Amino acid sequence: MNITSNVLAVALALICILSAIGDFTKNPRVIETTRRLGIPDNRVNILGGLKVAGGAGVVIGFWIRGLGILSGVCLVLYFVCAVASHSRVGDKIKESVPAAFLLGLALLYTLTTIAR
Image 1: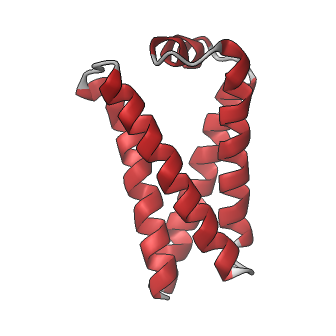
Image 2 (image 1 turned 180 degrees about the horizontal axis):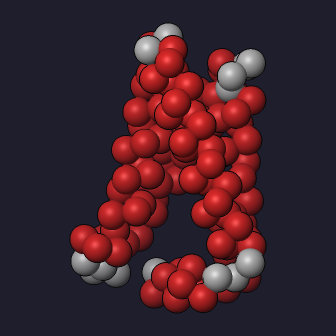
């Protein structure tokens, strides 16, 4: 499980940080999505900050396992909220897949980190 957990950690951290860059740079696709979800433009940086914090916590989890687990749980909750937000506005599967994929990735990372 250690190798699996490490690979998932790297993937999750990279995706979260790259996604946060889109939030911080106000990428038009990100802004379009957040507006559709009813998130005010001035809150997008907060979402990016949460993703950076989660990704950083996952990386620090290589050395401090408890922080990695906590970060994984927080990212699971974040992406549960993201999937619920897409569902609430009636998004089609195409629009919900990225959030659902990241939810699954965060969940797998958390479970494999707990198991090691």
